[in-house]
Length: 207
Image (cartoon, rainbow, N blue to C red; front, side):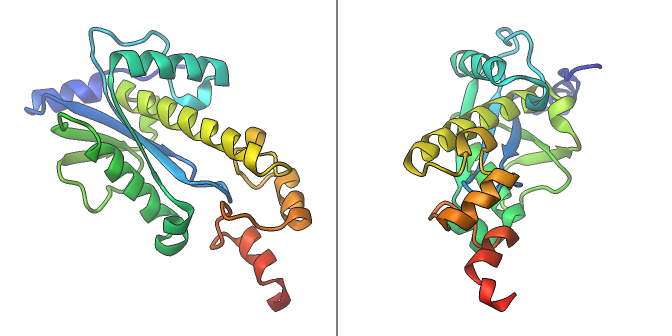
């Protein structure tokens, strides 16, 4: 299977955008934890070998590549909280995390390549979306690796504070074990109350 390359970045530079950031997020599907986004500007002279869509990589390989990217590229990571997910909706919260990640890059990029279909509404720079961008663009693949690694580490830390839900393994996704623990142990401050499995438990008298 063909991996991501720098074709989209080259097209952006040909159009006059010299600093190009790849942006991706992780955590739309879980019922617990924040949504996390990363923005990465690669140094094309120091690209770590083996960059790929984070979903194609194992945890150890992602962690090693994340460290290599932090050492060789310009990286910004940001989140939208559970409270923001519940108040805004998950798509808007994911876009907010992307906007924050881009705002954290200094110097600022001139163009953003964003994984997905819809552009975040409050971007302060030129941008274009790429469907399955993490499999097409090396910059977006790098962002997917950083975002996934950082969020997984966060969920592992939260699992120590709230044992029993399996967050170190399910990362907050609604697995059978996680949903059973939700029934047995109750709802934590890190559960997304607007998501149906959590909402149903909180308001089960209405169902």
